[in-house]
Image (cartoon, rainbow, N blue to C red; front, side):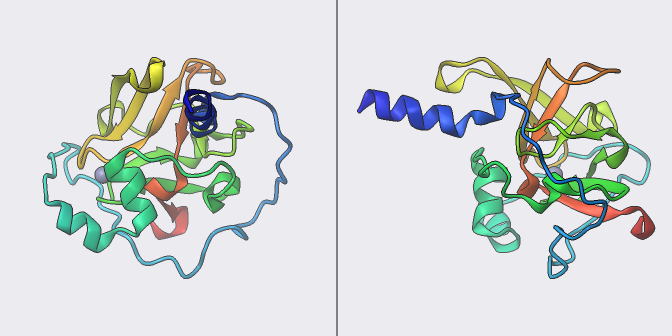
Length: 181
Ligand SMILES: [Zn+2]
């Protein structure tokens, strides 16, 4: 049983993997769900991030079950499951829960992991980074600085100029095309 659990955790934590997998490189938004609800895009007016604290009921009301599992319960989406993994459009990736702009398409890169990956956040103060020692590993968890929603993890094996790889769950993000900003 212990081995089974360990194996399950390895699958769950496959975000650590940097194995190169060829991914089709379409230059369209074909993978983006056009029926996606109009989630909030809510940049701070003066650049200051006010902490947003609310109830579990509120999150359950505005998030799907999978979004709730990732954002509020530190879950992980299956790799290659998010249409945003292949999204090559120019725009901003905001927090799916509170609308805070978090990452720019200009820092997105193909990591081969199956999760949307970026080499730096839009503003360092828009994300929180905290050491996560669960599952017998030491990783750095990345969360939204406004609503504390879990986004993913950051690893020190990304491309230059930062050398960082922000490995994120697509369901925790809302893509806003440049034209809509
Ligand atoms: Zn948020």
